[in-house]
Amino acid sequence: MTKKHLLMSLAIVAMVSCQKSNDGLSTNPLENQQQDIPHVCVDKNLTRTSNGVTTEGAGLKSSFWANGKTITVKFLNGSTFVQNKVKQYAKQWETYANVRFSFVSASQAADIRIGIAFGGDGGSWSYIGKEALGISASEPTMNFGWFNSSTPESDFRGTTIHEFGHAIGLIHEQSSPAANIPWNKPVVYNYYAGPPNYWSKADVDYNVFYKYSAAVTQYGQYDPLSIMHYSVPAEFTTNGFSVGYNTQLSTVDKQFIATIYPK
Image 1: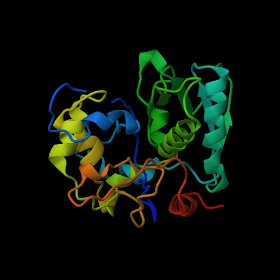
Image 2 (image 1 turned 120 degrees about the horizontal axis):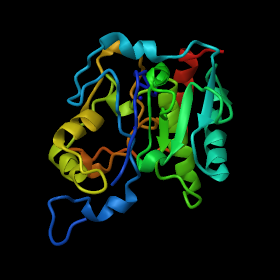
Image 3 (image 1 turned 60 degrees about the vertical axis):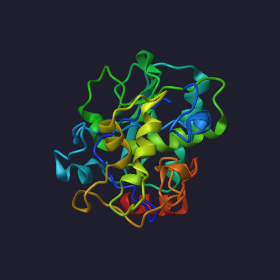
Image 4 (image 1 turned 120 degrees about the vertical axis):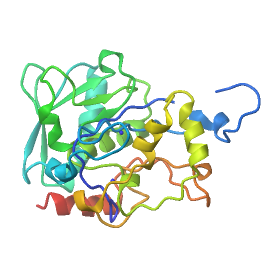
């Protein structure tokens, strides 16, 4: 819903959505572990089709905001408690990137508009970078579908930083041109076909396996510790490679975003 040396490349818009059974024997080795795998961010990139084909190759690089930009942000709904958690963790990017988030009232115009399960949407996502400017002013450009008063602090932190990473132009790390994950595709397809995602193979190809072209992204060394990386259980790969649930900025994340928005 990129980096390390990051691939956190930019993308042009990305939205993120998430969700996550079965009785008897299953071919899915993760079936009984689904509750332990964190929510995932789903791309709804305006420059890619649903089958993962790039339609505007140079678009990714153009999704960054101007260096030094003050990006206005407002909430369309949500409790004060949840809103304050989002504000708290979004600000972490300001320490390393030369951008600022200015949270304004709901009655004001804003570059980024945040929904909290807006319209019943249970996914978490964000458009990538400046693509948010092309979205209707009445619609959210970011959504946190599972945030509430009972959300664990680690999820507030990890999900918020991740989505705001998208909002300043970063893509998923596993989609980096530098990534070379040995996916066990049958297992991954089978896992995401179940609840809560119910994804088709095309959805998995788009959200998990897709890699951006080096020609349209800005990226560095692949970083499995990146905040922009999906969690990857060992069963998802052919050699046992895995990535945990990253809930804070990695060293490479910090270094990479500073090259995009230098102070």
